[in-house]
Length: 500
Image (cartoon, rainbow, N blue to C red; front, side, top):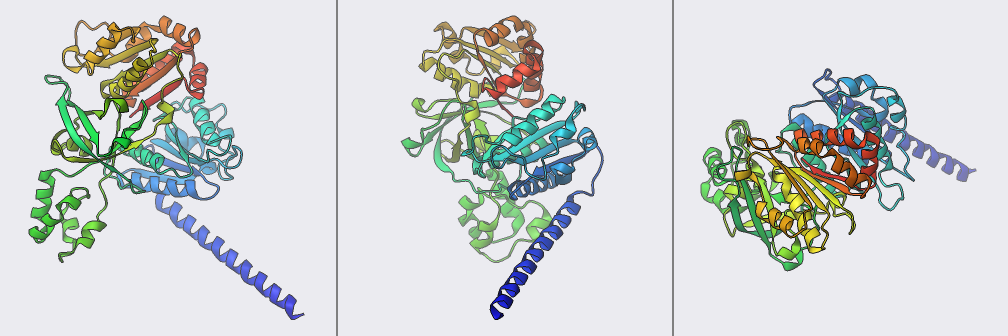
């Protein structure tokens, strides 16, 4: 009898433990949702999650926090709780969704898609972060289904769907970077640490002197180890930027801490986000200890398309300077184009971008881009030339031919050698330009484009700015090829974008 009583007691204790865990989870959920769901109106960003095991919810919480730190009003809710009215009236929707099993939707997101039928979301802008496990056949299937369903109802994607394979750190950092682009707040803290490699700044040249636009620089980096020369056309580099000398000196002056001690930690401080406000400075410890410096958050990374191939022996970037409202150079562009000196160490990490890798040999390629987006397209053209692939068509736009035809010598040489079958350019500030923007070129050459895609089975690759160029080009492509046809091209890897 005592044995049965013991078993009953153990089961009772276990039941109480499970109830307490459930109760604590519900309380946490209530506190979390109340913290973000006080805002309403058309300026509110909707962050929704479909999570079976908790990963998507955690990332959605981090997403909401990053947006809130950028000054955005947030609503954070499970995907099944999202109403059509919220989608139609929010500033934008960020959806973090998991797929589990063989392509199944999580329980708190399985009714979302069915509620979208026969509704218009033409005013909605959205982005999807899809979590999954590539060991399953239907990798990130539910995330793709959500993305397609919204697009079919007229919503506009703020960028390409981002896939995360088992909490892949590089994909999550890319999502964070994308959030920074959307909000204009780039001083976020990376959720996961970045393992950088030390490269050397070997060469830097302004490619557009006299341009009506901001200066753009070709930045050439060489590796500390030849084995790091390992990437494909279409891959991305993550740069670990540093503070400028002026910012460091300002911090030294404001902190009031022993300057000798601070300057002995200068290399460490160069990579840290430095306090700048009076309140932040006042909260610093007075003692000369390295621990509080190490505890400062690292500067957030910056991403750039790689313009070169490993066999060239160096990694090339095309970086346009940006300036904030105070006229200060951007964190990444300032570091690469002005603050770092030749032979200085540049910390970086190459990130594989398989959705923008070259198509199979023999597939004709239509390359469309503007501005510094030519960097990613140059790598593809260089690769195609080395492989003897001649069916390449480049459509490119910038401000002026005289100053802004980036990599113009390379492009013209490939055209003369037969590796660019068609070259069409648009320069918006040149009076004699046949078209003002890249999307105008697409419209003008609609018949050839339809022939390349439908009859020659060409792929379309786009690189450059999302706002204006990429969205305008997609609108033209939908008119020429049809919306469903373009979606099928994307599904089959024949419509690929690297946009920012």
